[in-house]
Figure 1: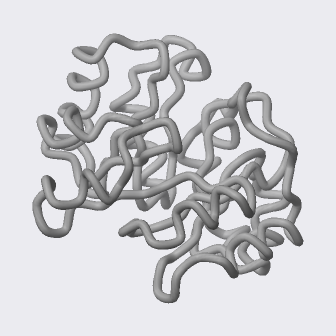
Figure 2: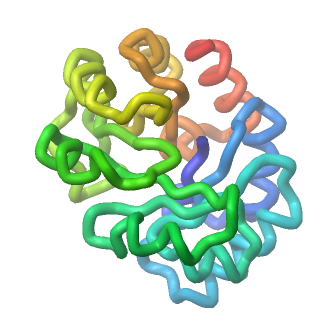
Length: 198
């Protein structure tokens, strides 16, 4: 999963950049624009839904995800609880939740999440409020707390050099920001991540 980041895109067209990442092997895109106005988030989500062949999710905003025709939304602990959201979304609409500690894992254990995003796996400068790095061992411990059948993806500081360690620790997939957008060629970067974590 590739997460958008306005600063790291450095003026590049986000639709074209995400299209390149998908060509390289990204299997989902999450629209994460923390500082943007809702109309900007909605416009980008709609554009990506129309341009990409993979699921598009929207960070934090279920309403914008629904308005854009996105495949789902990713929520944090400060957002509306999944249990409150689930009855109001259509069947098949994906709802993911962030988990960064055993306390958070316990809190969301019974929530109807379609996947857990666990991290930060490694140190990251792309999310200022991320907690301390879990490392593969810490990731594995949290991943084991997910309800049976709920896939867990690793996030935070993941690169082609360490992606395989996260997969071996039990990740069903990975979510990345800098590993794609710090690269000059998103397609090649996605391909490298894909082969490293296969």
